[in-house]
Image (tube, rainbow, N blue to C red):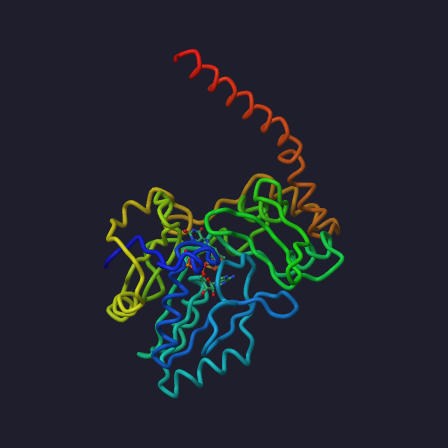
Length: 306
Ligand SMILES: Cc1cc2nc3c(=O)[nH]c(=O)nc-3n(C[C@H](O)[C@H](O)[C@H](O)COP(=O)(O)OP(=O)(O)OC[C@H]3O[C@@H](n4cnc5c(N)ncnc54)[C@H](O)[C@@H]3O)c2cc1C
Ligand code: SF4
């Protein structure tokens, strides 16, 4: 089936999304056809929840790196929409899509599975927020397009913001330290996909922060073509050079032993993560100094060659 590098032509939409803003375009298309969109948004208590919308796709944009809860209310709403014959678009992690697909086949259900590095238990995020801020944020972002940055907002005030290299929470996520145990044995990190469409980052293509779009069904291809996304056809092999999420699971880092021991010893998440990552954070200033020296040496070399 087809593989595309695709992007949303509206730059504002791309800025608010993790990659090319394609999930937003698919969702808007389904809503414009009278359908319903299920995805993940933040609740008022800053929990990631699987919910639905019939009009506003904005709260569902961008990646939330915590395990999302599917409430019984949302689950029964999904069944009601499907039984009534409404078109439903469901975007989620492959494990969520697979569990949905295992229930029953609905011809009016279109599923998008995401390439997935893994998710963090929700209580880790709650504890980290309480550790970092006195106030409860009303917006959390982990990414600004291609840049990984952990930011907490309350209205227009920025409560906290660090790039991935300097954020304990984000570095613990990206290095795999804080992932749920199940994610290291994920049965979905392979070429057998659970959705009609697979979405991910098109690692290796920087233009427009393009999404990787891999189509698996006629319904998926038709929805993608109707969405108005800009695209160019590519080869699957181009995306396979970066293996996690598509050819293999995220590997457990060696620091995990220290992290788990600290948790078992009764330390809360923020303290356990800081203990496990201490060697990395202590080495950071030396790494920065080394990079600076390396850069200066390079500049001098270029100057001498002129
Ligand atoms: C937890 C997670 C891990 C990911 N890991 C990788 C990876 O390793 N490699 C890679 O190439 N791509 C990964 N992705 C996918 C990538 O980040 C983008 O989501 C994807 O490229 C689509 O981007 P977009 O700009 O079209 O949509 P976006 O606007 O960024 O959002 C896409 C959709 O993600 C859904 N979503 C957000 N958070 C969650 C969540 N916690 N659980 C379920 N669904 C959620 C939203 O409902 C929305 O529909 C991951 C995404 C998530 C959520
Ligand atoms: S890595 Fe696998 S088990 Fe973990 S959230 Fe992603 S799809 Fe689910």
